[in-house]
Length: 348
Image (cartoon, rainbow, N blue to C red):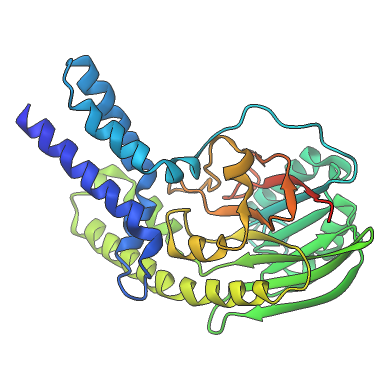
């Protein structure tokens, strides 16, 4: 019983560190970002302790319960419980953010991988047949060679592409630009759209990638955990996480500064490669509202790769928009799930 109490206390203390992680700049102490990534598992551990202590008829369950409630905002960022949504008006804007993992570009790959990507493409367009009413697609890990495929498949006439980020839309583009994150394949693309009589600025962003998916897959093979090679892989994985964690704050600050100067209402979508318990997320949501937090339902997991329980793909909107709904399309198109929201520009 004493060991169980100490274990419970340890989980609670680490949970509080995860609550602090959005406020600690990784450039000062990058290790705090690891506590933020661990939040879903810490939440699960606290829930299990609540159940365990209740079964044992001990009042210690109150400690983990209090810990969960003290981090309620973090809970809201990972678990959605909005059961109803208002009717979707025809004048709303249907926005999708999707990290495609280059599934639309398969020419340069080997035969087996090419067939796999082509199958994923087919599944994607079958699901979103005729565009499914999508008005704006903010894509990541796309190439300039994907233009005709996406324009035809989703019936989106206008587009702007830079490095791996793209925006496809049915609305005329009146201005456009990009941000190049130097010494990185990641980037930010933005456009000003004419929607009726109003102009709206839309960003598609892809913050610094951790590039640890293959490492995680290797490490998750349990039979290797006792081997020196496995611990070496874990060390290499942590070095990659550190390198990326040090780059994302500056990228987020640049985007936030650019957004603050926008003369139009802003929609920001993309793959942050960071969870809601992160410094970068906090910087980017200071001006914007998170569609999942407002209208999500169920677990917010958006990453379908080897690291489970990550929410790293977002649709954020200016408070001048009403967020009507939010969906995570949990289909096997990519190692990320598409996220979709209907947004309605409020009357001035």
